[in-house]
Length: 351
Image (cartoon, rainbow, N blue to C red; front, side):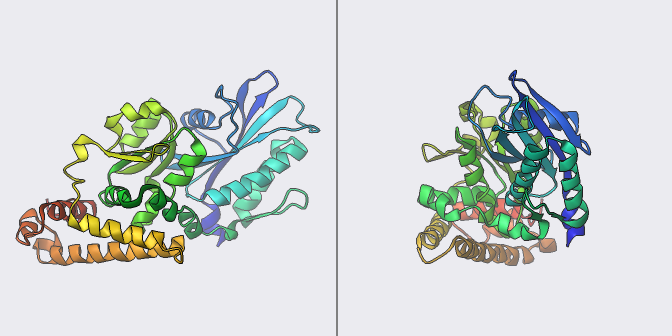
């Protein structure tokens, strides 16, 4: 267990806001690059003018996941000159519940001792043994947090209840590895909504497409641009005007989904989409079905589509699909278009 699991952690850091209102990166073990440190300071909420405290946020930058727990320091405490602090954990894996639980233990240690050395000891204990035990600060056991639970923690039923038949747009965009941008002014709402979306393409089990909390800042946007497809969340309303960043735009507060002009051809909807959309809605609206069952239902439907695609490809050269082979089947235009772009996304297309 612990060997591969624990090797996923990369670092633990500490950001403090003092009585003068200054926010500083004060400690880190073993190290964090200057570039990533700047990003983490921006994400931690202590550097912004807003008085809103985000107790836990997570995201990804340059293939490194970060998890930030922020605490409002209450009297009495040994931290005399500190008003707030954030514990930052960086890791290779997506598992918000795991790192939220671990950072809560580290936060309690810091409040009690006011010394980063205690946190470093806790971090090393998890790194080497997969467990951090402490009577007064709570214990943390790495094997309690299976990655599949993290993948299944988002609610597809909630997504469908908000967007109904339009969920098919999100499904199609994910299947075709398109760029989806989601806007909401509240970061907590973004984190909850965005993390659910990769489950619509469960066959890939790929949460690396998830960038739930992005700022309109050059380095972060450059990092996004190198990705073929993504699900990216923004709190800045200015992102609405940045059509260079998305193929599909979701305005969460207004419950609106827009397809960019340049993506309309690849995203054209037809009879097949309508059928899949109805299927998704029917499954999600069934009160007897859990989120896990809904994900299974959609996954089965996806497998059906993919095996049809594979069987079409087998007829082609080198078990790859060509546009000519597709045209010979006389599918409706929207279906042909979807299958062609899907074959490209699944690397089944002969170029």
